Length: 282
Image (cartoon, rainbow, N blue to C red):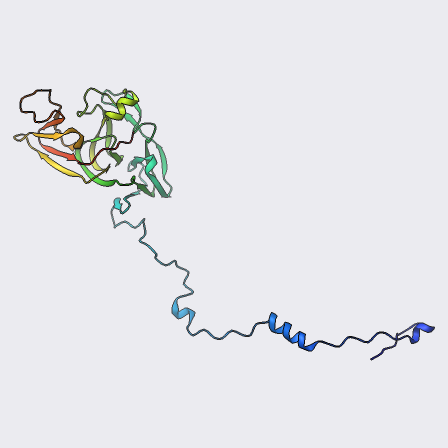
């Protein structure tokens, strides 16, 4: 096939051009097949019927922030402690800083000072290594215990004494005070050296109505104490007591003493013990 050039005069007016190349219809058909896939077959089910277009997330595990109606605190497997705080700044919760795992909402945290029975400030409750922080504001807060430990709720109705090293948290509606422990009366934990504080822990006194949480290396057990029936307990077993008990470390050689490491309780109340309690926070 030839064509003539249009316009102009002279020899160029009658020159011919090279013929167009023949179309490769077979290659074009191959390219069209490769770039444009064949139409999809219809689905054997309806997306709407199967719920595939539902944007809600499936429940793959229990919701951590799901508390029973009216509950403000719960212990979950882990173990984890879930605390729900309201908007009242007086209804806060104090927990270990190192145990804090998650916060949902507008919680505000601050250090928690520890007063002493002498009325003086004793620094931050829990010490500088793992202090307590006070959480206030409407929110959900999650605390986690250390490995191989358990958590237990302790109801406080009046007065309670708990070892500082096992105290995990408490509602701040409870008044708190730190002082020498009756288990180690010769050592004041506020003014003790670091070595003394490690081996001899103080006791936190909680007053009012609310809940405290303790972290243990074993199960929590209770021993009743009555005025007519004094109680002797191995000192390292004791994690605290409820009520106004008189606690005394018997003198060596005292009559009726079974073991020199026993502590004597008298009065009406409950002694909290744990047979495997060994580790300390400090």
